[in-house]
Length: 321
Image (tube, rainbow, N blue to C red; front, side, top):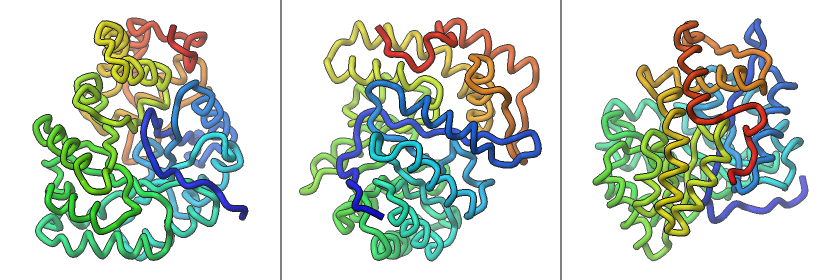
């Protein structure tokens, strides 16, 4: 494998792509390649994340995850950086995934905390340190750490988060989903104040304008699989300090928040798949159990929300005027 560029400064708009399945719930590689090309074609995105929540990674075998890395690099090459999510309860497996991602030419990693930490890992910061040590021993790819909501028990307390960023120079950014505006702003400020500043990428997709306005360096969101062009326009408006334009773009995004992020939240990516069918980009939408297809009434709600957002087959993925 030829040398590839590391994505050392994760910022801007980074969509997390979905994973299409066939009716018999096999990975639909042809549809996945097309989806990658569609999202990669959005003017202004910074990178693409694969094998994350949006891709239903919990239901993907390790072989399917590895194949997704290879296919993604075939499609994107070095035109758009590839960030590979590292999602596993095993630290040893996490190190193997990180090594495989690097060997396949990935440009960065999105590291999830092991879900076993929900039982009290926040009380044992040495476990988090060991997790990152094993990963960074196996790979020198830049890392985006996924900071979970506080109420999940998977979030690292701020002192632990800052300690990890100081100890592991590979950590370049945080995908922040803490869900608390006060903590969110404090994290942004304290991460920027480190001797080696660390970026904040928001994934607060249901209050994106407010989150970006607090000083985030970008966003990493599954909704980018559908509305990356609107996210680019919003991010640019916020960066330019143009509140009037930002509010107007946010008004277009807001119906998609209701389409994707209403309760129950676990259906968010199912709904995004249905949106792409409605908009003519996908032929069909299938999810693996325990996720289930939305009801006809909910699919109709998604259709109406997309109409209110002004999304059509013609405007999807196109630059926002």
